[in-house]
Length: 141
Ligand SMILES: CC(C)(COP(=O)(O)OP(=O)(O)OC[C@H]1O[C@@H](n2cnc3c(N)ncnc32)[C@H](O)[C@@H]1OP(=O)(O)O)[C@@H](O)C(=O)NCCC(=O)NCCS
Image 1 (cartoon, rainbow, N blue to C red):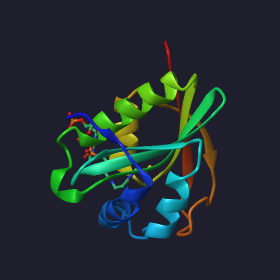
Image 2: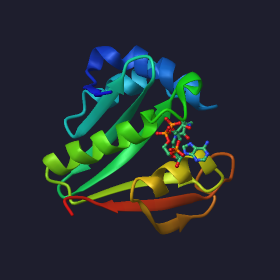
Image 3: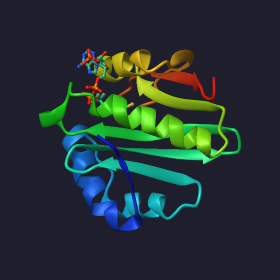
Image 4: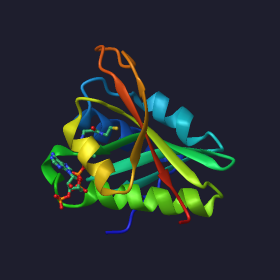
């Protein structure tokens, strides 16, 4: 299970996967704009899921991560997070950050299982009023 690099032509594919995983999906145009941004990278497991990240200097962040419901709990999310961490480290990042809704138990468990630690809380961050937990993982250690 080795993710491939996402290219701008994958925008529709990512939008479909994202819509399978989130109640407020991002559209194809949003993904295309992100995928042509020089400091954004995406990794895809076709038909299963993807991760999108931004790397700036020595910090990287996970912008979104989606695994289609049919294949969850098979290690896809973990594989994507680990591949993103390796890619971010190879691009010079020494920290990987993310924001996750404080009521998203699956994602919180995945991030805890992949060496992220809570580093902050953003109250009322999401449109539905949920708080965001900021998490950080040290890379290259
Ligand atoms: C969160 C998400 C990406 C997890 O993907 P996944 O492929 O199912 O995760 P994995 O199978 O790699 O799980 C790895 C570990 O994370 C934890 N985990 C994942 N889902 C879990 C769940 N529903 N309940 C409890 N622990 C969970 C477990 O420790 C798991 O290891 P295990 O299966 O050996 O017990 C997926 O549920 C998803 O796409 N959710 C909707 C979108 C989302 O919330 N994205 C993240 C936004 S920040």
